[in-house]
Amino acid sequence: MANTYTQIHIHAIFAVTSRACLIDPSWKKELYLYISGIIANKRHRLLAINGMPDHLHLFFGMRPNQSLSDLMQDIKGSSSLWINQKKFVSSRFSWQEGYGAFSHGLSAMNTVIHYIHNQEIHHHKKDLIQEYRTLLSKSGIMYEDRFIFHPVL
Image 1: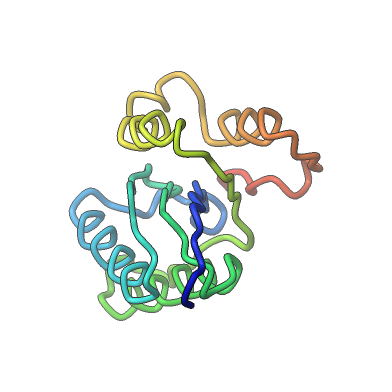
Image 2: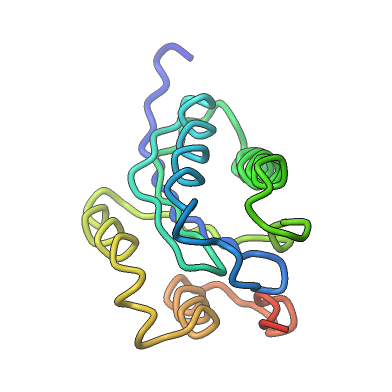
């Protein structure tokens, strides 16, 4: 797209179905590399990726050649299939329906990257639901509790 200039930075959060703690440290780096490849192949730019056993955070620069919903569908669908093909978990792996996506300006870039890289430390203070509600509220997003990531069963 000639003469198209954008600066779109997205922080996305999505969870494992039922927030089951299935992302194991033994293969999470492979998963991150796989998701990084999806983002790069779609011509977006990954800035940070990290998470916990039950959810992931992505921060990426997004080009306007694809919708956010299509990109998230690609990431979640392809990575679920890949995890299942690799047999990393004994049952069928899937991501929970939906995701959170928050836009950030250039001035917040380092803060968001630091926040994502320090998920393990951050989650000693807040669980995913508390964290997610805080992000939604700070972003002025109205939500219904029944649509927040389902609790661990």
